[in-house]
Amino acid sequence: MQLYVSPTSPFARKVRVALIEKGLLDQVELVPVDPWASPDALLAVNPLSQVPTLVTDNGLAVANADTIIDYLERHHPQPRLVPADHAQRDAVLAGAAQAQGAIEFTVDIVIERRKDEAQRGHAMIERRLITLNRLLAHWERHFHRDIKHFMLDSIGVACALGYLDLRLPELEWRSQAPALADWQGWAEARASMHETTPPVT
Image (tube, rainbow, N blue to C red; front, side, top):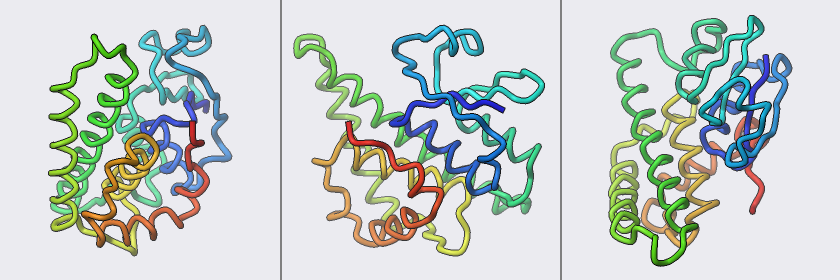
């Protein structure tokens, strides 16, 4: 298998973490690319020029982090990243969706801030920041900070928080969510998170 990645992409990091947690990393060739440059190699397998994109051994190109992780769950079910029990599965997927939203909102802010001042969507940035702060407060009160298992919801939250550290350090989220910060310390000590720490750029 091949996995097209960008070192700083939180979406790609989720998949890389999943591969390590499943013990599959040695079965995958990581192909670093800059999706913004629309490289020919990436376009050949995914005309959307998105990372991550997984190319399976039979040549199927699978895009979108959660779709890739679902593929891995079905073809390499152990260890599980999504519980088999329906109620537990629903809870994990609901949490994973929140984490995905947090990552997407953070990416929105990053993209807007890279625009010229006159073109920048200041109202959208402010709305996204308010939403992220609200979600952090919600996670501080309600996120199940499991330190026995690292399921898809936990992977998503850990990658979302790591991306906040990388791109929005001024948010200082740890000061408003100390319990979540303690849990993030546990998550970041896992080999899967440590080995996928993005470079500071």
